[in-house]
Amino acid sequence: MDQIKQFQTAIKKVLQEYLGHFSSSKEKPIETILSTDDQHGVYMVLKNGWRGKDRIQNILIFIRLVNEKVWVEEDWTDFDVVGRLIEMGIPQDRIVLAFHHPDMRPLTEFATA
Image 1 (cartoon, rainbow, N blue to C red):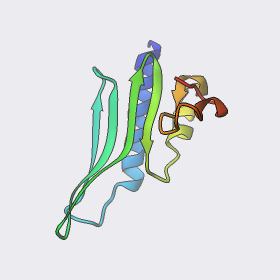
Image 2 (cartoon, helix red, strand yellow):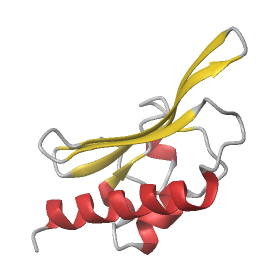
Image 3 (cartoon, rainbow, N blue to C red):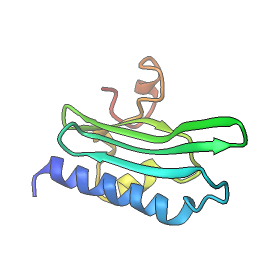
Image 4 (cartoon, rainbow, N blue to C red):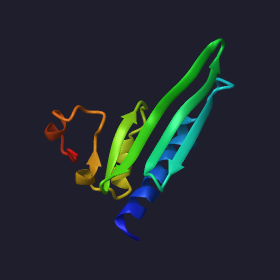
């Protein structure tokens, strides 16, 4: 299995694990939605629905595959997405913490771009 396929599989497993543990919303009719697109390298978990008269649309986790690296664009959860990706075999030097400003990324032990 090539590296991109391994990354795709790991990302989807981690996001499905998140859904299995944390997505049971008592806030009906708010849905937790998993969206995966291997062709474009885009993976998301989002909340969508209504709370009373307020529209709820939040991206909880947003990951992209760019230039053979895993870009964690957003992670608004208490679930250790990056830690789980590492446990699934994705090396730190292949993960970009894209939610950090580019000037801050060299200060981490992760890829910068």
